[in-house]
Image (tube, rainbow, N blue to C red; front, side, top):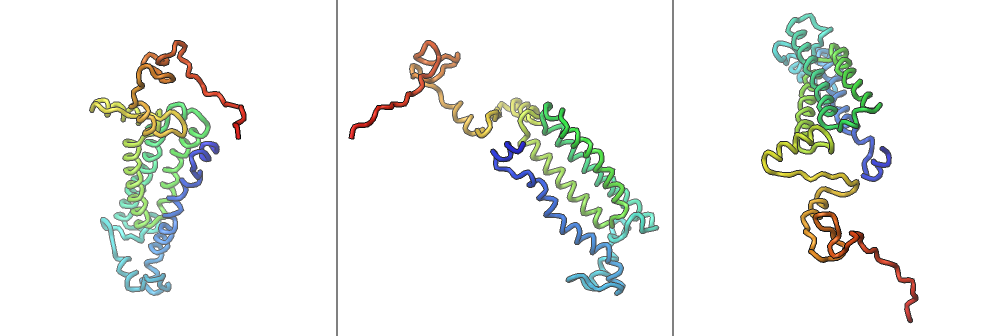
Amino acid sequence: MMELYKREGTNPFSSCLPILLQAPFFFALFRVLNHLGQIGSGAMKPIGPLTQQLAAQAESSTIFGARLSSTFLGSTDMATKIVAVVLIVIMSATVFTTQQQLMRKNMPAAALDNPMAKQQKMIMYIMPVFFAISGVNFPIGVLLYWVTTNLWTMGQQFYVIRRMPAPGSAAEKALEARRAAKGQSIAKVTIPGVSAATIAESESVAPTPGTPGLATADGSAAGKTGGQRVQPKKNNKKRKR
């Protein structure tokens, strides 16, 4: 894997970048929503541009009757509990669906039978449970943020897998079937470091009959009986001054 990363110029930690980018927004949103009541009542100092008046207005904001700063465990309102449960279920389901479509649709069958794939499958079942347990302490606004983020990620991943699937995956076979139905073709890249455009360009050039070194349709070399290309030899003679 490290040789593959080095050859393709990929950083193995780049997959953590989206989480690191949204982490400050998540923690800031969690802190603000968690202290709206205290800031609005004057028991806590304002946080940055969030004044006491703005905090009081945000505290009174509701979604389906549930306050954005309320939590499932910290509220006795039935509307808040229902909204929190619905958001937690959607959040857990989107996390599971995103990981499932990545493994079942965009991974070759041979790649699913290894310890790393089994570990990812275990994470696929553990992460929704983790979000369901921790979600009861999240404010409604944070749950709403996670739901919208997960829905966007799931839709984006579905689009990428459908249009640019991994080689050998079930999504690639489905793409081939759709293009075959439309009379189109898909170029497969099986040689590391060779792009699909290079392969398509080489296949589009027809060999000239009788040209030494070019293979014909039956696999034999044109103009040669053995089908072996003559390799150039290095001339070791010294050049005359």
